[in-house]
Length: 356
Ligand code: UD1
Image (cartoon, rainbow, N blue to C red):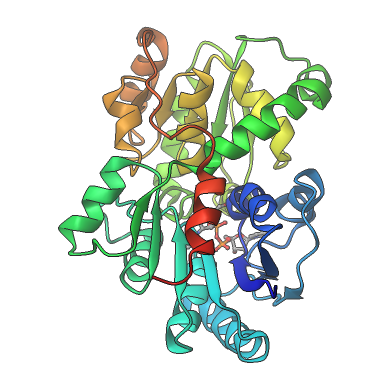
């Protein structure tokens, strides 16, 4: 039997984590060709995840990182088109909402290769976010749309997309179940940073709307500096650049560190007294780990974490952030919002049935 072929396009940090469980599930029934666009290229933003997730190295690497949106997406599009032309896969598979997602999606659609989108249907309803543009466009040219939540299915229906839509759960949950056990066994980050469970908060910031706006990043730093706890802050390269350019200083309770690998990140998250972030993935991981999350944005795609009472949207309002941190302590049920940890298997089974 000749195996069907799959061209998977990844490029940014969270995509490596999401692709790992799906690649494992695909291994028995697909020949997978992995394309790394190079959107993220530092060791700590890319290679470390391939090592930790034990992923096979990319078959193609486009080195299309940096530059403006058009430069980055354009370079990727040209590179992916050539690869699709030579590999002629049965499917193209993309994840999430980054420029790499959009480039993979456009290249597939133009080459008339069925496109499968993992994490379809998410919406912030904020078109100022590059991610919102990327996800709306990708969904509208996908043949198979793998939704993590019911809200995502409903968002697609609102836009008239009902064909090829499957609610499979969230591959990040599959990834978490796999990786948390390893993290608990092997991560030494708490010891090396001199941290104890519940004695610190964890912060991350990387969205363009925060990281590229000096007033917003200054407000976030001011809020973090006002908290009655130590704050560990692994800094994304985009955010580091802004901190340097704007000459922003940080309070003594904030410890800035380099980006960390996924096992260390899960360990930092699981043991934090609070997570303050503008990351989508971390809002979900906080929920799954039972850690309260204060989201440094005005809206979220992961509305069910807010509805369940474990996530609070505080924007960059210093008082709102401080007051949520000091007075808000969620408790109670955490319903299984993100499936049963078998999303990757389900995706693989649906893909095996053939394009539509
Ligand atoms: C991208 C995604 C975002 C995702 C995030 C995960 C888009 C529009 N945004 O944002 O949805 O949540 O990845 O982290 O696709 N840089 C480095 N080293 C690296 C990677 C990036 O120095 O390894 C620099 C880039 O050159 C760029 C900046 O950081 O100047 C931002 O990188 P970019 O790829 O534009 O997107 P992210 O902010 O990471």
